[in-house]
Image (cartoon, rainbow, N blue to C red):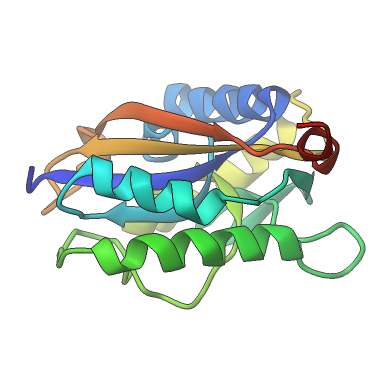
Length: 209
């Protein structure tokens, strides 16, 4: 159990998931980058959580999502974050942040952080970091370790004939379990299992229930 980490993710719409998968597959084929593509397409609500059991994490998410509705998700497109490349889904599309998304992350993090056990994983930030920036990774840890390709990778992504919706609906939260050698380049041998997904209802659905 000690090698298991849990991730609670917001799953994008299928068209965006397909775009992310096409981009990460292209980056693996052209540059050998594997970190972002080792994960299912997602925006992390909380990741690299070491906990005693999946059942405890699942129960905490159940409580956190009670009464949470689906909401619009804006995709601002591909941006750089240091040497890394990602799709920015943190904004509301009109100059502010996506407040329902921030609130969702706060609820999930607040529910599961009391379950967190100590861990010292390679190139992983503190589990209780107050910084939250919702994004979909396209090229990540590989470029943190070896950033010389960062500019070329960005140009390559910009030239790919791949599109994705600028606006969609955030309505699926998923729980995954991950195993790897967390002391080193864990993304090279990362394995994961989908444990459960939660569908966030619309207010109309709730009123008709």
